[in-house]
Image 1 (cartoon, helix red, strand yellow):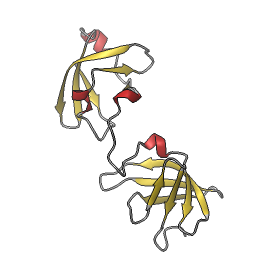
Image 2 (image 1 turned 30 degrees about the vertical axis):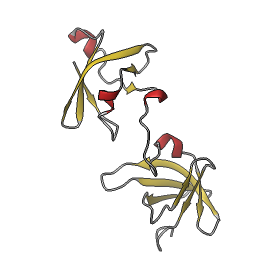
Image 3 (image 1 turned 180 degrees about the horizontal axis):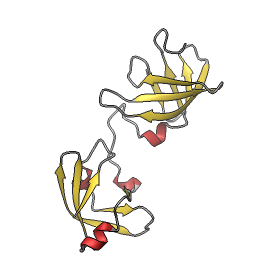
Image 4 (image 1 turned 180 degrees about the vertical axis):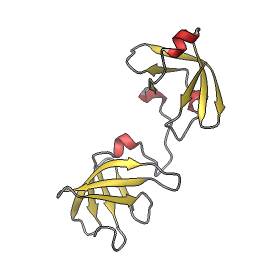
Length: 149
């Protein structure tokens, strides 16, 4: 078995998928069993049957393919789909591009880079980010007073 540190907000996915990919390897690795411990999942992966094989995975990332991505609820987005979106103010003025999403327990924070190169941090909540339009690749923000100064 191997311990896997989770970067997902949906660890139960390991109960729903049959296989995954391992960094720098092209073949599929099938999951025999998954169990959960604190903020980790412990996986038994078919073909990883010795301590040496398990040790060979240390520090590598695991991936799933797009076919195994869970269906998102309304108002949920994949971070990869958000990065690079154009950001506009409610007035319609172009503000910048979404450069990163910082994940915290309370709420995510959008890192927006203005055309002048300045970085702004905007809480990813409906009050400040009323519109996310993936199809048109844009986000509209309504910043609170002082946030953009």
